[in-house]
Image (cartoon, rainbow, N blue to C red; front, side, top):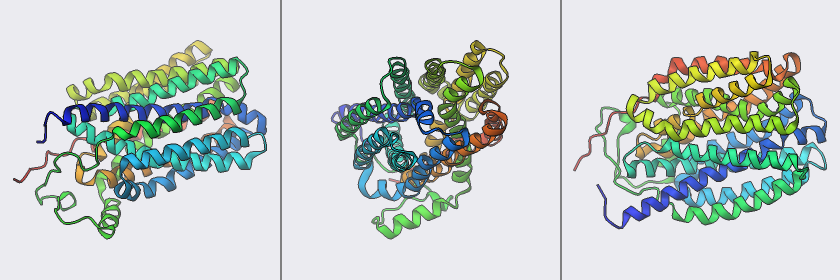
Length: 414
């Protein structure tokens, strides 16, 4: 174990940098999401129309995620997150200006936004897993709590911008510049991706065997392709997909459904969105203690049930106050699924980048299929009632949650 005095401040600095990366990613996501109703109205889109526009963001993310394992393995998590932070800032500026000229500029901007977000996501999760191993305790949910803190901040600023009549262009453009500058500065504190001893495991599981052979482009490609054939990795991916769908549906549709189904103002709809995100933040911040005490499987199953209850209250509640309560429990229950899935994917440091990439790719299919599915259903049964689709995937997540059980500790060979 490498625990020299010099590495303590290094790991602490890296921890702060990972928090910054997650927070900034959250700010970016919520800043865009908080202005979806205004962009929709400016473009005159139906629920299915805005669903198709959101599909471009998801498509960019999926394409990026399919390449992210290779990108992070070659360039490292620090350079990947920095580059994608700049690209995301440019994309958000394009959306901020382009929505005044029609749908096409928004679609192009959101595709670039999604592409940047995908590799950024894998890069910061790989770095987060490295820091988690160096610290020797569960901290990944708290990094994702940082993402939720960012989304709450972004949503509250968005609500204030709406209430004050600030234009979408000024709001998103200023946010984009700040994100790009801060992320480039913060990732300088990331530790190297090969930091710390890489455990060598016994050959009882051929997919987990460590190697001292030099890493080549060919070996990285072979590792990436082999990962797509690992049953546990694929099931963890489906588990993450269910929770990503649950989280994404709240982010994309709470504001819209509050306005359309409950008749609230745009500002109140955005506040319901912020409450959902705040509940996720609380769950992610206090979740590590529950995970350490009760284990991943038991905790995520209970929280999936909590999210189901909140979703039912949100859909069936006859009044706005009950919808707010439902949004709170929906967000609280959805809080740990995604970060726990990322930790499960990164259990073996030797294959962390490729497995996180695969799991994230599968999970982000929720963002690819979710917006158009909810949108098309919303055209027929209202967006609020279309959210029943989320309940179906939450039930699936409960049944397959056993896949996120930690892998056995590898035997270290001296």
